[in-house]
Image (tube, rainbow, N blue to C red; front, side):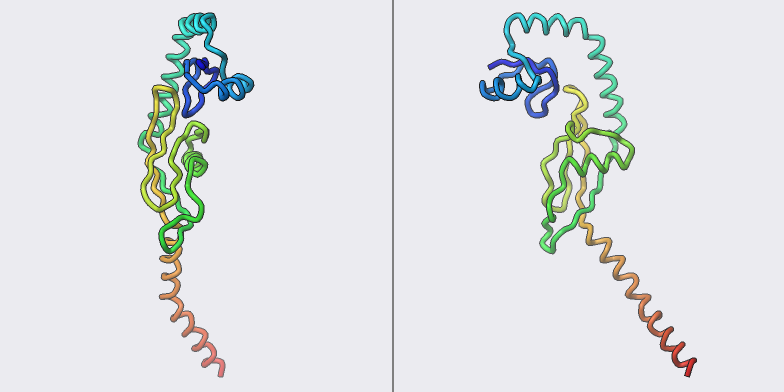
Length: 176
């Protein structure tokens, strides 16, 4: 069944694309949700006319998407997560965490336009940000253990602790 999409659907297509989908998916989900219409010959003619009239608007949208892509082109994310002794994450790192980290850096990007295979181990991964059907940016994501910096912090006070233990002992001796 051919459907003309009315909005972007990651994994299927972009607005005004004509896609082939299974009949049940088209009839029971896309059309009732208002995400697509049946691609009849008359609907295709209307689509062609609309695209011709909106060519300059589409060029402006693409230019805006390229600006956003340029802004995050050099961004690399480092996400700390709780890790077991075997290197497995408790849970996973996905698009929600990537979106939150980008917001912390001042880039307000909707999680729906980000695709990434969920990270379940420590290592390097790549998140794809789809700003426009022709503009996609790869953002490197490094997942690190949250425990490692905590262990370093725990070791630092241990070195200072013996001096702190000696000071109360000297005060007690001075009181006697």
